[in-house]
Length: 195
Ligand code: GLN
Image (cartoon, rainbow, N blue to C red):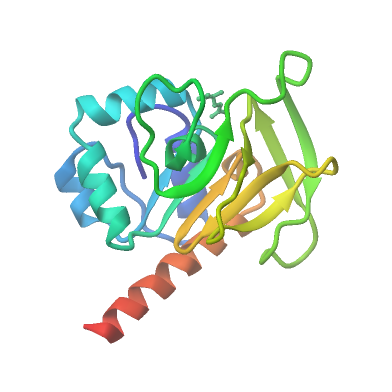
């Protein structure tokens, strides 16, 4: 769990609730030790700065290029994207999408919606949006997982990288965390059999 800023504690609690092991990552040595990484919601400009200050940006890019499973929620999704208009530091850039920050304006600063998410069985997910981004221009390798009723993309996946504009860690529904842990387990198993 990337723990530089934002709501990483809520993610860790969600992971513990489903029996997964989770630890806080703030150094390159800690990053080298994990099998998957969640990037939390928070303030993307702050986290982008801290990634550089903590000398994590390049090690993180290297691990992602080598296939580290990752999931970014909200600010975390912004950081994973390749194109982020208005972000004053380079994003990590592994996800071939454009992400517009604070896409819902003042009136809709935060809201909730019932979302059908591809791959999540058992009915819609209650999605909490807080000063949320939207995802645009998905590249050919990107699978759209969820859209709002108006068609805007709010969840997607490219290989082992997952992004949601909303915050599953802020509800009691653990299906998204379970899906990410399953993705990470599958990646580990694939690497184990390749070795
Ligand atoms: N608006 C925030 C940003 O641009 C993201 C909000 C969030 O993570 N809830 O970083």
